[in-house]
Length: 128
Image (cartoon, rainbow, N blue to C red):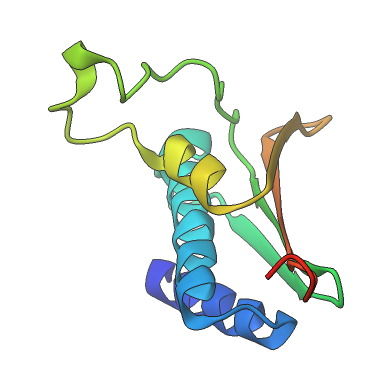
């Protein structure tokens, strides 16, 4: 389902008015958030769900990704840009998410899990 989520995010970003490159980057950010929700939030449990909500608006693109697990600590992973971590095979998802969208917010859900909200604003024609 990860590929479906990625493709859907790209399409919704295009509907919001983003060009192909920005839409791809948004898709990658959503993909990473969904993978984190499955692997780290739900600890890959097949009994737990991940919910993805994608929205296009005049202002841009927004998404929320929720898991049903214990959630994860977004400050826990080591910095992938530090010399000792450059060759690690994982740990770049949060960095990519922050690079590809304008806002990334994490919130613990009251009962269980984590909700990640991301936003990417359209540039006005004067800024472009």
